[in-house]
Structure formats: C-alpha cells, structure tokens
Amino acid sequence: MTIKIGLFGFGTVASGIPFLLTENQEKITAASGSQLEIAKVLVKDEEEKARLLAAGNDYNFVTNVEDILADDSISIVVELMGRIEPARTFIRKALESGKNVVTANKDLIATHGAELIDLAAEKGLALYYEAAVAGGIPILRTLANSLTSDKITRILGVLNGTSNFMLTKMVEEGWSYEEALKTAQELGYAESDPTNDVEGIDAAYKAVILSQFGFGMTITLDDVTHQGISTITAEDVALAQQLGYVIKLVGDIRETPSGIAAQVSPTFLPKSHPLANVNDVMNAVFVESIGVGESMYYGPGAGQKPTAASVTADIIRIARRIKEGNVGKGFNEFHRPTQLARPEDVISPYYFALETPDQQGKLIELAEIFNAQSVSLAQVIQQQSVEGKARLVIVTHALNQEQLQHVVSDLNQKADVQLLNYFKVLEG
Image (cartoon, rainbow, N blue to C red):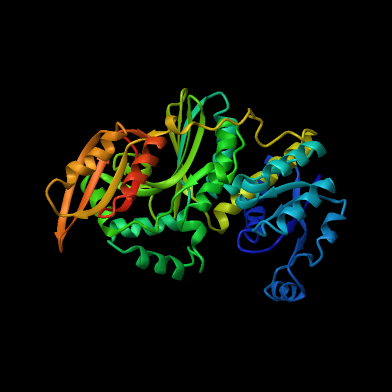
C-alpha cells in the first residue's frame, strides 16, 4: 500500500522530511504499514520551482494549491508554510477535500486550532501538530498518550530557543540584552523583528496548546499573561546568581482550585531545578503530576531535522490509522469546560528591583506598601548608591496576582520611586 503526501511549502523543515523517509525507510515502512511517497509540493511561484529543480530536487513542484487539493490520490497534506494566512485557508480546504493534515504551525493552532479541529472531527479526518510545540520534543503525544492515566497539576517550560540562547549568554558571559540580541540575529536564531521571541508571544502560543493536552481546556492567547526579557539587566542577572537563582523565560500552566492559569514570564529558577540547566537554544518541558510526580522532556526546540522528525512521526501515525480504518480519532481526546483561575488563586513569590532616594526611612515607607497588601518580605538587599540614588531589591514570600497588581500600582504611583523590574520566583 502506498500513501501519497502533498507538501505545502518546501523550506527548511519540509526539505528535511525526504531525508528521514530515505534514511529511515525500513523503520518508517514498518511503523506506518505503508510506503510513503511525496507526490506533489506546493511552492510560491515558477521562479522558486525553477530554483529548486536546478538545485537537484526531483519532485513534482506545483504553484497552484488546487493541484494538490483536487488530487484524490493524495491522502495527507503537510503544511509548513508558517504564518496564519494562507495556511489557515489551505488547511480548511484540504480538510473539506477529504485530506488528513499535519502542521507545525503553532501560531495557527493557538489562534484558530479549535475551528480546524472541529472541522477535522466533522469530516472524520486527522489533524496532527506535534511539531507546533518544542520542535523535536514529543511532548504533545507524551501528554496525550503516555501520561493519559495521570493527572497533570502543573507544566513549566523553557519553550523559546531564541530567548533562552540570549539569557544563557547574559548569565554565563555577562552580555547585555542588546549584545545577546545582536548575536542571536547574526546566528539566525532571531528574526530582524524579534518581538514574538523576546516578548514571550511565541512561548504563549505554545502555552495555549499545552493547556489543551495537559488540562483538557481550550484557552486563547489573551488568556495567557506574558512578559518578555527585554527589560532584564545585568544587575538582575547578577543578583539572581547571588541569591542562588538563574533567570529563564518560563511558560507556566497550572491548575488551581478555581481553574487553570497560564503565564509566560522571566522567572527566577533555583539553580537546583532541572529547567535551570536548559541552555542555549534547547527547550524543555517539566511536568508535575499526581502519578509520576516530576518528569522533564528535553531536546531541540527547532531546526530542520528535529522538527521534521516530529512532523514525520505525525505522518506515520496517520498512515497507520488510514491502514487500520480509524483515522478520525482525534490527536487529543481530553476535553473539559474551560475554567480560568481567579487572580487570588495564582500564587508565587516575586522579585522587585527598585531605584529609590538614598535616605533614611525610605525602606520603611516601601515596606508599608507591601504590608498594606498583607505581603511579607523574605529578603531585602540595598545595592550601591550613586548620586543619592539606591538600588533596592525585595524578594517577597508568596503573593497572589491580585496583591501583585496592587503592589505594582502603588509603587508606580510614588513619584520618587522607580520600579525597575519585577519577576516571578519559583520556590525551590
């Protein structure tokens, strides 16, 4: 039995699929129960088609999506174009044409996944997207299958390789944010517009998807509070080290008594925490559950072959289900009503960095702001004084998001105090 595949796009990841199909043919054929064949590849225009053919790529390149959609011999299409459109339209049309779909498009799945999943279910087709979260780490299938008997209570993740590379250099090499970003762009890790990476948006998309698989709830990007790394300074990095922490951009999804809370923010991780040792462009997902307890899944979050491996695994699973006649089974079968946590149930210690006048009584005045919200202080550190200004660091005991909002608002209202930064602290 031969199962034919249509590719939407032939960029870095897509061109890694033929490599795996060739180099691992025996295992893939055994796992899928079929021969897998790339039948047609959609490319942008005739110029790109000519360039790819001249480079020695021997595929049936087409420039009109209808050439794939109207081909009844193609059972699976793989979307690796990126961005929301035209990918969303093409996937909808593919499902409406009776074709199963694999995608690595996290932006699309996070924003329009629900409608596409519903359409796939209505048509009795598969829509898989393992590579949309953490590239080569099979975290979605692990949550859906291997941990299906377990109750997940919290998922923590270093989910963006670009920001993690930058923070690694800031911690280990003492680089500034600007130096780290410049190098990340030179190495191709960061785009010319790095906003999605450095402001936590990319990680927030992944948190949306992880919430579905870990907790069975469909949330939106607006439900994920996200804060980026662009305000982190060398002083914050050094202070974290001094206190026994490492700063990472961490996605945090947890279940509270009132519902789930999803956040992406710079976080002080204890140096003993497994995520603290996830460096450079690597990703990791740390899962807390009532059965297994604690487990971590580590690997490359991007790159041609790691991402292609996850995409190809989805193709294999669909091919096997086509052969067995149960292709309409959903990728994630855990669903329950979405219930968001109340702010007062989302609790963490916090780090505050402040610049204040270097004068007697100022610390007492600031402590009263925290005390007014019933927030107790774990550590207070006064750093160097320059021109009558002091840098003051306060680490609190656990406070909830409602208390946090009041404290931040009250600090910002003080004319002679500048709130430089505030970051979540993960308790050791």
